[in-house]
Image (cartoon, rainbow, N blue to C red; front, side, top):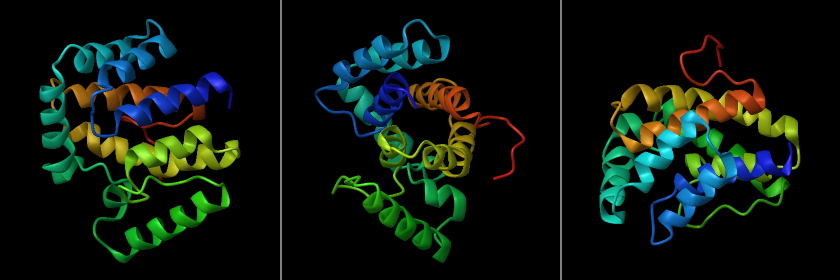
Length: 178
């Protein structure tokens, strides 16, 4: 993966974390990294055009209060089951083997953590597997749960289009069985 491709994924990881005082900088970084791409422009306009408090409220209602759109990839794949626990254990081991430090504030299957790992992972095949087998199916579920006016829906669709371009993943409306 090129430096530019890694930067693109890192921008998504930044915006999938809880929005803070640096939200506008995160949005500007996404915009400047991608340029005029329609999927990304929708996310930039949706997130960059709102006051911070409104974006924080939307983040909370979208990801924290809506179980159908929680930001935990393992939940979308396995629900609250033993398999999710096994996935989190595998992710912790994978992160450690690649010298990736998981943020202390969250679980290893948080979407922002997994996307950030894919951005910095030196093993391109591993990053591709994670994108196709973990991120893409979770995105399908999350996007389907959001209405068209949700700014995070635009961000998730843009991430899906980016993954499709980078890894030949089929994150939205595709037919790949994962």
